[in-house]
Amino acid sequence: MTLTLRSYKLRFADEHVRAVPAADDEGCPFSGPGVDLRAEAAREVLGLAGPIRAWLEAREPGVVLRSFSADLTRPRVLVTLEPGPYDAPQRPRVLRFDPPHANDLVEAAAPLEARLRRACSEALARRRAT
Image (cartoon, rainbow, N blue to C red; front, side, top):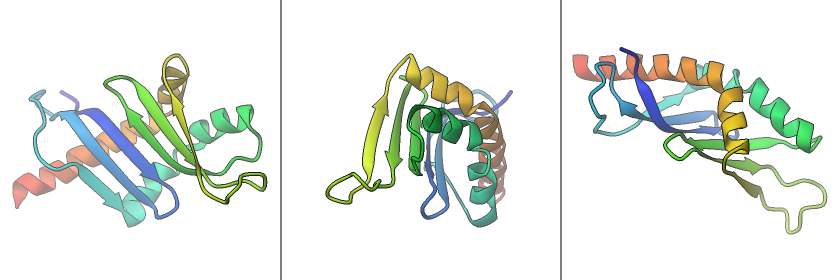
């Protein structure tokens, strides 16, 4: 059986990924702390965000993605964008997407989510081994 995700957050600014499984590899409800990926493991997942960036760029050219959070139980997506030249004061913008646009973004993130599920499975296996 494959691990399923409840939620995840991609933080591009500091190359950090945090995921919370919904169920473990055996299909049992997940309990415990989420999985944090940093360094190369995070960069590998973040590198698969091209379709997310393309979806956002198609709607607002020139946006710079700061973070992306997906709650897969609702579904709901929160996107934080770096401030643009016309944002005042110079603070990040937060956008919330509910269906149908949240569904579009989750679909765009499918390859990223597949890699993230594998990374979570590997991290949880290491936890169990210690």
